[in-house]
Image (tube, rainbow, N blue to C red; front, side, top):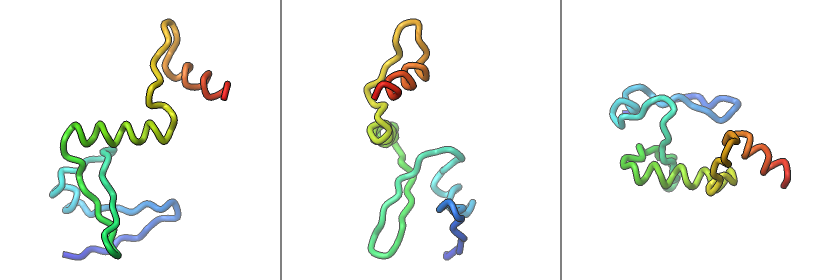
Length: 86
């Protein structure tokens, strides 16, 4: 089955509901995206270990992987303070 979608100016596209239902993908969920030859492939990450690995990779890219909350200080304030000092 082939569907056609339009990519927005922000690089977004809508995945047809039939595909999302089939893969169990819900709004806000992370998906794995790969290229195979001339195709883009979306996959549901599946296990909690896979999701954890995806989140850790995202935290590495954002520079927040090993940041922990300081006592008496909010996590967001801690991030803002550390990045302001950089």
